[in-house]
Amino acid sequence: MVAYRLVDLVGRASAANILGISIRELGKLVETFQMSKSFRSLRDPGAAITWARELMGVSKSLLTPSVIEAVIEKVNDKRITNSKDLRKLRPILRDPVAREHFLSDEGDIESALLRIPQPDPDPKGQPLAELDGAMEAMRRIPWTTLQELRGDEDAIRRITAAEELLRSLREALSPPNEQSRR
Image (cartoon, rainbow, N blue to C red; front, top):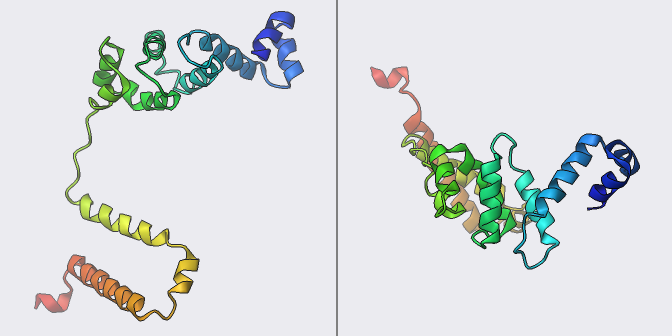
């Protein structure tokens, strides 16, 4: 709001110089403030800036006037109640079916998300994805916890069983060697 008022008083170039920002950054601040005026039905009028910032965070190539109008209308009608939900617009606006549904009168963010096709799971990739998940879970174990398990016979037995399972998995997936072909 200060940047907007300063532009009114001294112009864009002087306002940017006073604030120590570029004219482009000043333009974004002014545009965000102007958009925030459209959000009228919020309990806290100061929250309108947050809503405008979230909406301005969506790619300009996706943010058409009809999208802006639809978002403002749905927020003012309390059909979108959390400003962070506007982040979900990115995938919606990239998909033509989901976009069309969102822009319709009955569409909202959640119902539009349901219209985005999910990629077909790759049956070959599923076991590898589960293996990746297991490795990630192991990486998240804090080293302090591991230090506490040092010398624990049960922990060592379980790790040995995991090693044997991985070795068996590697052998099952490895191409047959020359000796087993004969």
